Amino acid sequence: MRSMPVIFSPTTPYIAR
Image (spheres, rainbow, N blue to C red):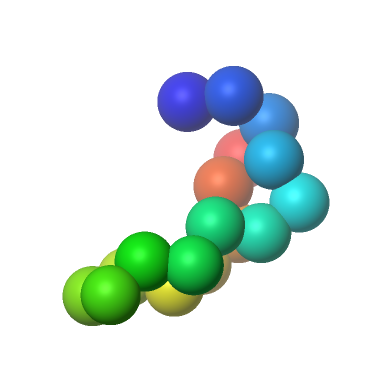
């Protein structure tokens, strides 16, 4: 995925690298 600051998911909220 694209380098985004923070991705909020309903199941996996984490920092996308």
